[in-house]
Amino acid sequence: MTIKVNHETKEFHLFNDHVSYIFRVLEKSKQLEHLYYGKKLLIETPFTS
Picture (cartoon, rainbow, N blue to C red):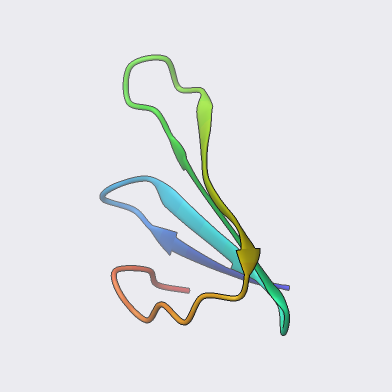
């Protein structure tokens, strides 16, 4: 499993050959917000390793 992180938006993209899971940390409450789970997305930016 690969994990890419956008440090500015606090978004995380976890993925393998088949699926992607994207979530972020909410600014005020520090809770996790689910953004996407499903077929692998091909996103190069703004995530970094």
